[in-house]
Image 1 (cartoon, rainbow, N blue to C red):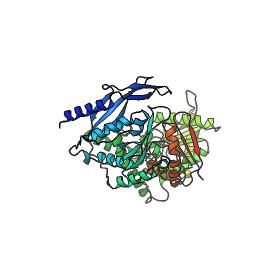
Image 2: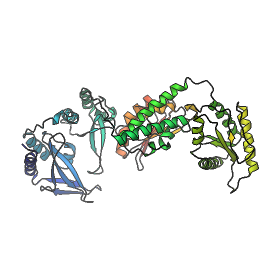
Image 3: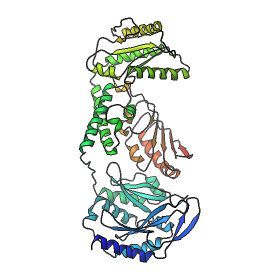
Image 4: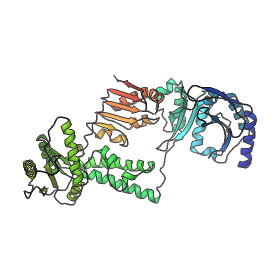
Length: 500
């Protein structure tokens, strides 16, 4: 039969089964009403990519007039959302509709061979009779996840999803599955899904996406070479012509995979460096200057003017902490790029003042302190003696700087740093991230011997409460020094657990 004929038959059956049906509605504020379903436009029939036809009814939010589609049954012969159908008083009609549609014996050519259709079929079989509503969706890595659709108590229009099992063959939130009374089903589902042997493959990038990918990879490699920013800073504020402007999530994921490989290769290369390199001696000189009240920064923005703006900001922060910085020295990214080509670094210096005009005599005092610190650590700097010229660091050397000198982050808002790199931040103490059903996988990709606090923000209190026990169990195995796990929602809810 043609698609048009099939849809017409499905619509006729649905109209007959649902004639006179009365649906219970709620406006989100606890006000209940009963509306009668009377066919179009309340009834909708559509054919999916797998060739099967589904029937939905449009329920109305009496307060806002918003239409909320409720998928009732399909030509597979199943009730699609038994939990929601029951809550709306439509379960009997949905079951009758499913029987009638199943009797049509629709067998789409090739439809049931798709991965999504196979996952859906397994989920329906394993969870039949439990009364729970499930959805099947694909995650960012290309695996399929079977999610429990959970209605929130405060209204029929609010519901969220929690992952029950995936085609990786695991149950990501076993404690939640147990609380739902679905442990056995979740484990059986995970085994059945694992047997599908799903191996996600990335589709080739089109020309524009490929150009953006390669450009972004080079942008991040350049930032690694400059060694002016920590790994989180590289990803959040890194420069270049491509990385800051990427919007395609699939391209971003591919770039980050290469970035992880590049970082690890960089650390492997560092193992062959001499025990003390020129940048280590320069860092020691700058540390001496910091101890003397001079702000000293490597890679201070992209330009000279931007560098001076940064010096003033840092000076303001230090003064608020009760310190008294009086001078500054720095070099910027363009200076580093010049050094990478074999030229000596040029250092800017001067007093720190809010006055419109600088005192050149005080600038000279800063320069002399910088010259002394550089000579102390084995350099032979050159300077004309004028406050209007920069110090030239000699002898020139090929610029390279150890990641351990840069990656000193203590507090991290996780996105978009790949979890595999967390262990490369030796001073990291706190991690904050946005949670969803895939957060257990995010945590599984992390490891850190320094993290003590984890905070996860969810969209709703229900999700946060559901996730907390599984988060604690998963995080404890990844962060041996963990002392505190907090979940919160976007409003006022917050709960903290102190793992033993």
